[in-house]
Amino acid sequence: MKNYSIIVLPLARWEEYRTLRLEALQVEPYAFGKSYEEEVENSSEVWQNKLTQNSDLGFYLFAESGGKLIGMIGCDYETKLKIRHIATLKAYYVSINARSQGIGRVLLEVSLKRIKKIQKIHKIRLSVNVLQTKAIALYKKFGFEQVGYFKDELFVEGKYLDQIMMEKFL
Ligand SMILES: CC(C)(COP(=O)(O)OP(=O)(O)OC[C@H]1O[C@@H](n2cnc3c(N)ncnc32)[C@H](O)[C@@H]1OP(=O)(O)O)[C@@H](O)C(=O)NCCC(=O)NCCS
Image 1 (cartoon, rainbow, N blue to C red):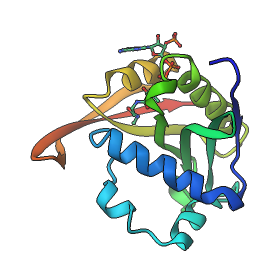
Image 2: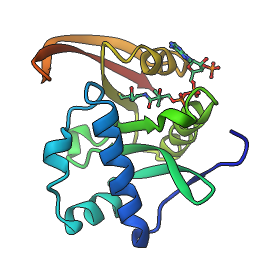
Image 3: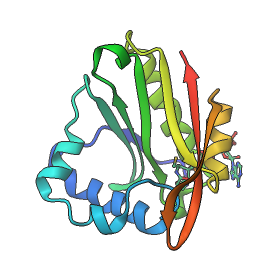
Image 4: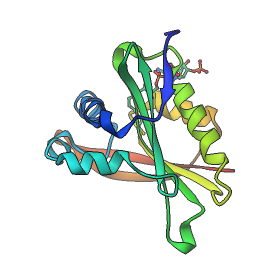
């Protein structure tokens, strides 16, 4: 897909973030720790608060094409003194019709550049379901290494699923 941009979403467009996040949870129930059934109950304030993280707390980036959001990634910065050198990637998703065109790679690339500018961050971590082989391959390409394997970490649609912990040092 040639015509897309990576943007920070203005707060006024929070409902588009909600729509994309709920799509992600419905389309990929195995990929995320959160559930559609729970998140769909969030109030508008909760969605807005999630989106308005300031630069001290992290960010959300979105891929937009033709005025429509087609991908997203989030990052949380820890704030407690002993762990404030850690950033956690989350909510990484590209809509099915927009996949395999490099958008996921660019979302990750732009996020890592952004995180590298934050002096205090020494390490980036994430957890990913073992079934998400494409995401795992992508994380490895960007230098993430598997450092943990949690068996039966999620219970989704009657099945226990294993999670991999990955990290990358800056
Ligand atoms: C992971 C995800 C965000 C990637 O988005 P995308 O836009 O399709 O990614 P890209 O088009 O940039 O492809 C990324 C790379 O994966 C490679 N790839 C494509 N299909 C693959 C597959 N089945 N297995 C391994 N690698 C694959 C591509 O060749 C590309 O590599 P390159 O950049 O070196 O050419 C998307 O697949 C997705 O939303 N998956 C479901 C949700 C998910 O797993 N999220 C992660 C939660 S931790």
